[in-house]
Every structure is written in structure tokens, then in C-alpha cells.
Amino acid sequence: MVGLEVDPVRVAAAAPAADPPGLTFARGGFELAGLRPALVRAFNVLRQYDESEVADAWRTMTSALAPGGLLVEGTCDELGRLGGWLLIDADGPRSLTLAAKLTTLDRPAELAERLPKALIHRNVPGEPVHDLIRALDDAWRAARRRTPRSAPGSAGWRAVTALREAGWPILDRPAAGAWAN
Ligand SMILES: C[S@@+](CC[C@H](N)C(=O)[O-])C[C@H]1O[C@@H](n2cnc3c(N)ncnc32)[C@H](O)[C@@H]1O
Image (cartoon, rainbow, N blue to C red; front, side, top):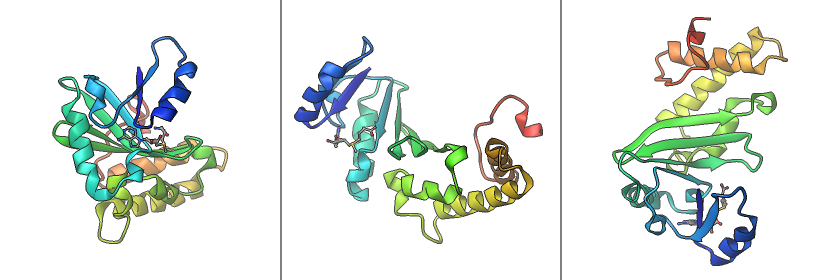
């Protein structure tokens, strides 16, 4: 695993902390420093850029990947309790993941401020991501009314199931057969 960073001061500060063995740090940007990785995680980086720079950054990173490689690009909060990321391959974005620690989540709309750069400015009426966040928020509120406060995970899955039943293309599931519950 290689941690790439454009700022040499930050690379130098990180190097002594390389732990466990197999983790190194190097100076590099979206061109990936000549490496050909199978997987790139680029979090909280594009948020500092202009939205107009996103597509080029994705292209630069995905063209440096090994064949079949993937880019995971997104944003999270400092504690990792809220996050949003896109899975991107050479053909472009494949999926959006919204992640939250449900025990501290008040409502899914909190995820809006952690959307990937390509979406964060699009959380406005008329945009699909705005419809998604609103639908998730409504479904979560309805699920919370039907579940004990002590079971936010259950409410979360109820909300996601409701979205899936309403036709949203939800890709994953908690475990085989769980959607039937
Ligand atoms: C907010 S920090 C994110 C730290 C970490 N990636 C994380 O997971 O939260 C953003 C870092 O990205 C670096 N950065 C900005 N543009 C970059 C680029 N093109 N390639 C690599 N690092 C970049 C900045 O120097 C800064 O250290």
C-alpha cells in the first residue's frame, strides 16, 4: 500500500509513521507517480478542487490503473461516521455509496455535506441526488417511527429496503436473503 501526497512536507512527516510493514508514502498526484495499482482510494482530495476539474482527475487516475482497476473517490467526516464515495472504472462512475454510523445519525440528509465533489453542488431540487437524499430521509423517518430507538441498524435497513421497493437501484444487501425479512 502506497500513500501518495503532492505536498513533500506531508510525505516526509508521514514516512516515519509507515506502519505496518508494506505501507510506504511517496510524493505523487493524480498520475499516481508511475505506479499501476489495482485500487486507488482518493478521499477528501477532490473536495479542494473545482467541480470542473473532477472529470480530468478521474481520467488521469483511472488511466494509470492496472487493467480492470478501480478508483474509490469520495469524502468523509473527520471521525469516519459519515461518508459518500463513487466507484469508478475506466468507463466512469459505476455506483454511489453512502455510509453512516447509524447510532449517531440524526437523519440521512446529514450525508449531503459529505457527497463526492461531483455531486455535492447538485443537492438541489431537480437533480437526482437531491431526490435520493430526500427519499432516504423520508424512508428513514418512517422507519424510525416503527423501530425502537435502540435499533437504528434495523431502521436503516428498513429505510433502504423501502427505497429499493420504490424502484431505486440499490445494489447491495446486508446478507443473503435479508431483503425478504
Ligand atoms: C484534506 S487532506 C485528506 C487526507 C486524506 N487523504 C484523507 O483520507 O482524509 C487532502 C490532502 O490531499 C493532498 N492533495 C491535494 N491534491 C492532491 C493530488 N492531486 N494528489 C495527491 N494529493 C493531493 C493535499 O496536499 C492534502 O494533504
